[in-house]
Amino acid sequence: MQAFTILQSRFVPLSIENIDTDQIIPARFLKATTREGFGENLFRDWRYLDDDAAKPRPDFVLNQPQYSGQILVAGKNFGCGSSREHAAWSLADYGFRVVVSSFFADIFTNNALNNGVLPVTVPDGFLQKLFSLDSEATLTADLNLQTISIDATGEAVSFEINSYKKTCLLNGYDDISFLLSCKDDIEAFEKKSFRVIEQNSRPLEFDSEYNLIGNHQHKKNNSKKFTSIY
Image (cartoon, rainbow, N blue to C red; front, side, top):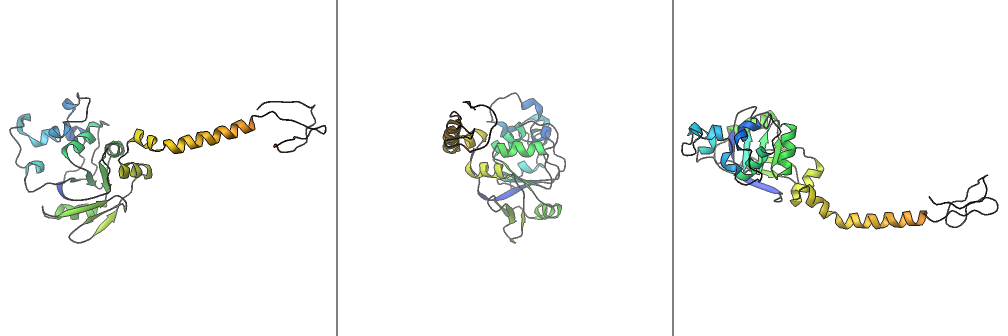
């Protein structure tokens, strides 16, 4: 997964609310098992007439040459509907690294983060300001600072992100590569734990007064002298 730190880009405005995952990537395109090629069918039913790639709808924003960039700005409740991860695959494959909205479906949020797409939740008022900007305007999304700003005015808002997912995005980790990055720490912990277990597994020895002797804590015991393993 490609690491993400800061992105300055123009953006594509899609001011439609309640965009569900079946509109992001229709179900008939879910047969593929790899992530490549899904961008061709992103918003397929809105992009083309009669499901024909040779007939782009001129009124749809992805077909309008004045709009471009790696940031998609969408209406409230983006990514609702089914849990298909293909929705995040299609956005990433098309080239979007950031999606901005005032609300995201939870499952979509996790799917996006797992595929290197940063969902940025902003207040409704700020979202409307973005929609009012011209096609040449640029935005800057800063993952370290957890802010997104309008470059022309400097106005910025903060956004929330799970700390673990933030670490993964900053380093380009998926869940497996994150674990692999912790290999040295895991091995050190295992060695330390083994030494503690080995030390505490030695037989307990008691003196004639039934007190523990050796490196163990001394305590009274009314039972007979014995040796045990724990």
